[in-house]
Image (cartoon, rainbow, N blue to C red; front, side):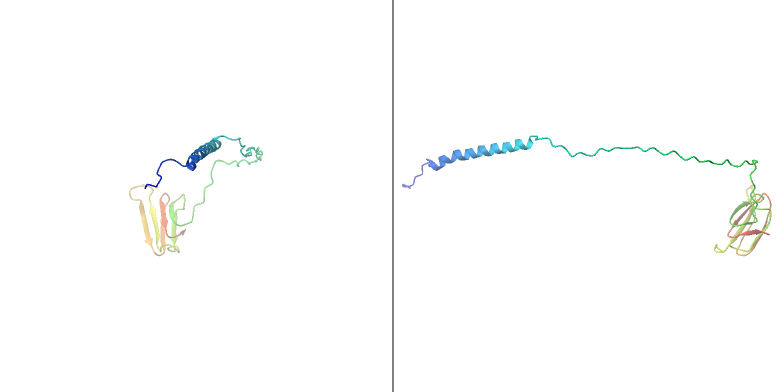
Length: 160
């Protein structure tokens, strides 16, 4: 090791490199700082694209047409009485108001029904309302009196 030079004395090339590296570092820092400032600094204002204005126009309504309505006919105040039915099917009827008093008959259950015919004469009031009734698969007959109700299901009756 007698011939080796281990002294820490720098060579000329090392001394000249320091100012170059330091200059590059300063230039890089200044360049980066300038870029940041330029990016955050507001530039010239740019006009936004113009949007068309919305205009609302209200149209005036045309005048309503004149309509002439004839007056209802003058009546005596009495209402016409509907004729009493001589033929009826399913439902409950007041004898003397909805149907006539008298005898009624049916040929039997209506086609397309359940195959049964039911009729009942009913009192207008009281605990036991059924005066008479019948459930049949054939012909049926009853006599209704004024003031009572008649209930029918599954068949059509005609005044006899």
